[in-house]
Image 1 (tube, rainbow, N blue to C red):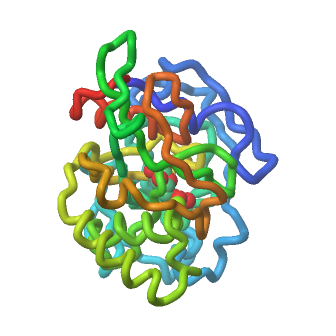
Image 2: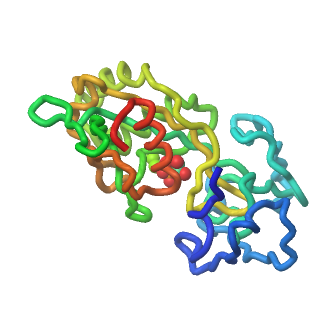
Image 3: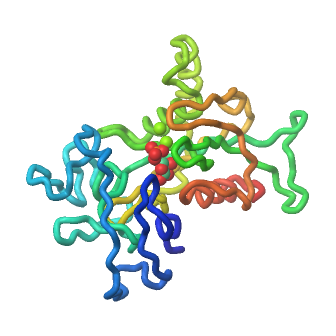
Length: 278
Ligand code: RP5
Ligand code: MG
Ligand code: MG
């Protein structure tokens, strides 16, 4: 497996904090690195936010690491993470920044990513790529408002929320603008989406190489593919960006996709599974 790269080097997102840089060999915690002394960053915007953890040294903060802590899931999909001096440690290794950065939770921050796909049709027939001789798949991509990068329309799993619910909710919010749609509109869309979102295939579950990750806080996701094979369900929808998405579009899938975090490797897995062009 490849080491994380998107949460290394350069400035930490939305800050002037420079990550300590080091070669790939020094990423694993098991490799000695005496000169490792990264800056600490904890966004002030998280203070007193009801959805965020308190500061790590708050005496009232008594998290249960590696456990389901009330309604907060502090378990990692990757297995047990290390905890040292009261802090959880990134299971993928060093990131060049300590603290939790802009992430709400110390340790794992759980998200879900719907990968909604349809075949690319030209005059009603599947378009075949001339090199691979395989049909071209399209997926629903959103442009993130925060960093302008194209991404899956994913989001955080709310405390106590079922992942299946998060997948549907985030798709509705970010790709169908459900938060601002008229009531009848969102109810009729809701019916079709409800049906459609019953038949998903889990593609990936685990760590996300997200630019917001730090040594003590990181993103994890469950990515599920919902495929509209006939293009008669969600595949025929006019998508409309909403919430933390500023644009949305059906995007042709191939290996040149440059997406947020590790989203292109999740898309690749879908393309291979559906024997589509990559
Ligand atoms: C990524 O961040 C996940 O894969 C998911 O797409 C996203 C969740 O964060 P927000 O979109 O809520 O910022 O790591
Ligand atoms: Mg969202
Ligand atoms: Mg989102």
